[in-house]
Length: 116
Image (cartoon, rainbow, N blue to C red; front, side):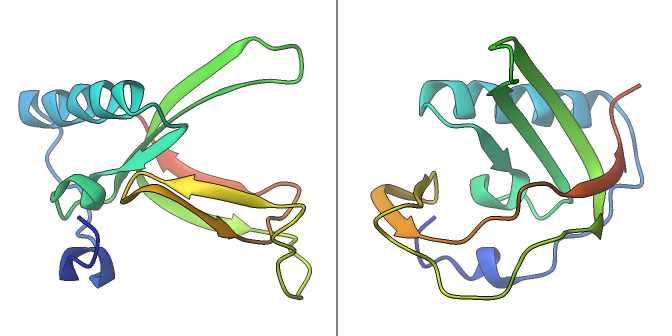
């Protein structure tokens, strides 16, 4: 997907919740787990829909997994400033084997729905 124009397009809202959407979510989890990764969005596998899956350990090292459909970021308390590539970097499944400097906020509030 590296360099694919699909990664620069606004993804479409999900309006139909059916077996195809359930299969897409399963494909996203399977692809993310195989990579391995902590998150994957539908456009990263060539599907132009507003869907992403995630998997990460919480503060007690318990697994947290889920799907967010039609996500909207409602609050992100990130401070402006350059990334410190010695302190913060992460990979991206769209760019296998690469790591990038970044600056992340401590938290974010995302609203959306799941399959239920």
